[in-house]
Length: 105
Image (cartoon, rainbow, N blue to C red; front, side):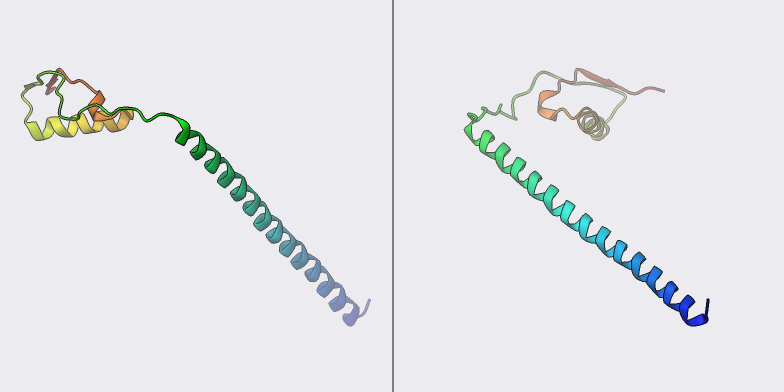
């Protein structure tokens, strides 16, 4: 095998590798566009369904569920605790009812 033949074989091998990489890149791009189109169709379909549903009446946010008792806790700390509980439980703060908050030592 001569030096010229080995260079040609190396170039042919590199060409094959780059051709496969380009094909993979095109395949991934095509696949992402197809998946994006499917998700868009699902989103449009779900929006069409949600428009058909009657709107739910919202409760008045100013309505209180009772009185909150604080034991060794200032109002700012109590507000932070209530916000954290609402966030972690993924329940809106207007739907939670706190009866008392007590500091633990």
